Amino acid sequence: MKRVRQRFSGLFPYVSVALCAFALACNVQAQPPNVEIRVGVRPPPMRVEHVPGSRNGYLWSHGYWGWRGSAHVWIDGHWEAERPGYRFIDARWLLVDGVWAFYPGYWEPYAPVIVQPAPVIVQQAPTTYIERPQSAAPPELDPAYWYYCQNPGGYYPYVQQCPGGWQQVTPTPQR
Image (cartoon, rainbow, N blue to C red; front, side, top):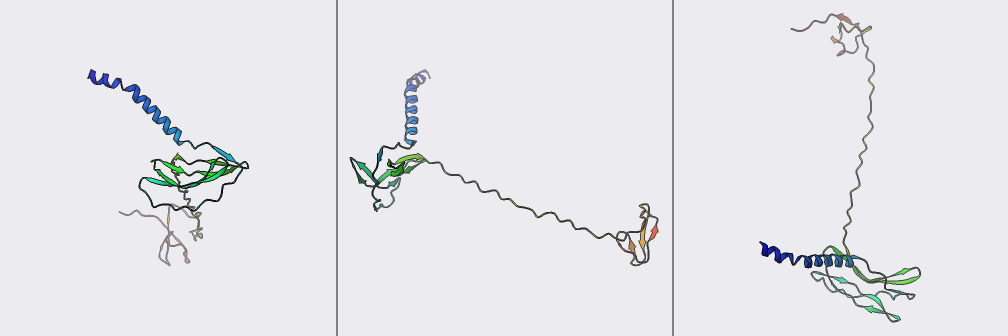
């Protein structure tokens, strides 16, 4: 066990330096490039270029107008090896403060856009209250009694109106 530990303890500085260098290289490549060229001459119109058929593991970087000395020169498109987790931004010219600025192509980390669905708001119909007409209750309703109607036959509140008049009945519990 001591031999294994001694063997790997000698590798630790190299591994840590390699990991730091890798992290730094990834960070540097993910940054967009600075403007390298600024000129007062507008680039010519883009050329129509024939894009070859797809190539597995590569993407096509479109051609662009570069700047050499004192004139624009056409740079043909080329294949770029794909980088998982990154997207390629083609070279381009942009008018910035009245001067044409050239931005070379570069790779940037791909951050997918997550679209949250809009909340669905369901408005409920307002509650509608229906007022029932007042029934013809027996006069001076006494809760100690039941009220019976001969025509139609039945007790209040099952029979709402009694044209012949209500009869007061003493309640009798069922056995």
